[in-house]
Amino acid sequence: MQIHSEGVPSISKLFDMVTSVTPSAVTTFSTTLRSSNTAEPYEGKVTNQWATEKKARQALEEYCHIGKDSFADKHFGISSSKEDNRTKSLYAAAAYRMIQDASPSEVLALREAPTRAFSLALNMGSLSARDVIDAARNRCSSYSGSNDDNNNRAGLYPSDDPLWGRSSEGSLSDVIEWREYHRLLADRSSKLQEESEQGATSGSEKIQSGDPREAGTVQYWRWKDQHLVRYLTWPAGKNYDEKKDGAHPAILLVHGFAASAEQWGRLVYSLREQNIGNDTMPPIFALDLLGFGHSEKPGLSYTQYLWESQIVDFAVEVMEATPLVMVGNSIGGGLSAGAAASLGKKICKGLVLCNTAGILEDPETYTGYTFEKKEDGSSKFGGANSFNSHTDAAFEGNPNEAPYSPVPVVGRNALDLFGKGIIQLIYPQIDKRLSLIYGNKLENADAAAVYAIQQSAMHPGSANVIGSGQKLAPNRPLNEILVDAADDKDESGFNVLVIMGLNDRVSSPQVAQSRAELFARLNPGQVIVDAIADAGHCPHDEQPKLVASSLLKWLDKI
Image (cartoon, rainbow, N blue to C red; front, side, top):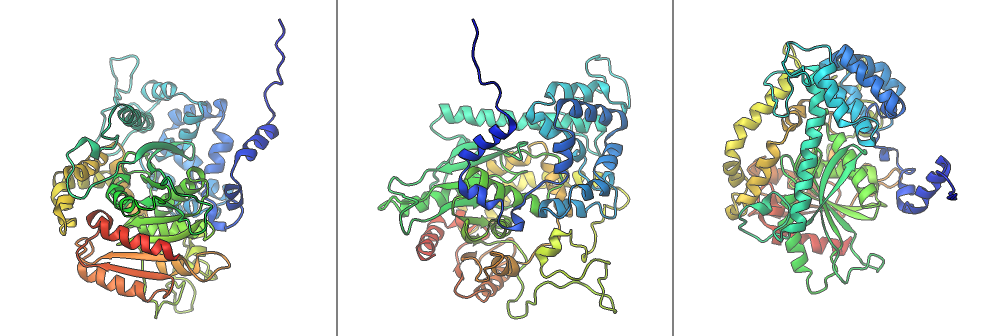
């Protein structure tokens, strides 16, 4: 019997099929703003040279033969960055900045070379996890000793956590083990969600107190088709109609350092409770930044532009470039502002910044982009002096700023050790420190909030995330991002609501008051400040009712 078939579609046919189901807003976005490009460092090299099975296997064997340092220096050096067009994304430029005056083996994270080289091939199926583990255990040439196990000559185990450094084979093994850990964590959450009425977050497993929360639905997304990212969703109200005049845009919530999407449950509850009469709340999303919460913590060099790119991609790929408002706390506020500048005002309709991080200069004396100069007026560090903005300079790797300097003497091993030290120091004190941060409402610093932070801190890869703080690129001031970078041809700036908890015990009440006053003068008419006396660094979780009320009133005005 002959079975008739049209055969496998051609590449052009497949492309047409994908295009036909892609929302027009997504297609339009990718061709609008320069900063909309979120390309990874070395993305061209990885996709063009190591995505197929043959090429990926060849790269794996080469890695095992020459070791991670030689592999990194050969494939992730200056020449590779130039071939990959270093200015095409802020994320890539920030990474390439680190290798301008140092070799990749000196500055990349301990596991970065194998993570960047093989993550895509693993997710595409060009490489299997079993083959990579076998290569790490039995085929690398840098073993320091022998092991009686013929199937594990290197003596590698999932529980390995050396205090100082990591071998080539160990780094390769960790790529697999860390991915698998977070996959199993995601599977567990999904199963809990199916079987339990309590929810599938870390906090749902602990006793909750204080203001009530609304548990979101746990979902997952692979950023860059590689790294597993958890996010929570809350559906729109039954009377919500996005096409109706006056309908509020969707809401995207972005947490701060060491926190997670779980920290927004109280604010969501208050928003929906105060809107219950109309039941017109828009859909709400909250994501875990890479390296935090239940998201993967791959062995990369983390910078603010990595996280900004993740937020932009989430808004486009998951939220399908629908109009949205971003709400960010602490570093999540600064990251949201940077991501908003990349999304532009057609997508990002406004920002709510809760005790936000980020450079904020006095609006009356702010003069735009400047850099340190020598007596003859040239750049102290030999860079170009023709940039019109901090964003322009960031696209070129900030050549007028001090170049990235590797850790002297002890090298990059010290960064992981530093991260481990911080975790060991802070972990036993998380409940006490959270009580200090939530000093205005201690009952909200409950066991659920504590456990969510504790669990994330102990995930594999967390130490590297903390150690990467030394690698952050120079920040763009909020003065530029919120006002001048809102759109290429729109100088009116973003609509911004600044929620400032004045009793901020992280930065200090004096700093909180000073920043509230500066924000009030930043862009009158576009930037509105709501200072809350009885709130601290996380006002959305400490005083959710007050923040929800302020946010809803502001939404009605924009």
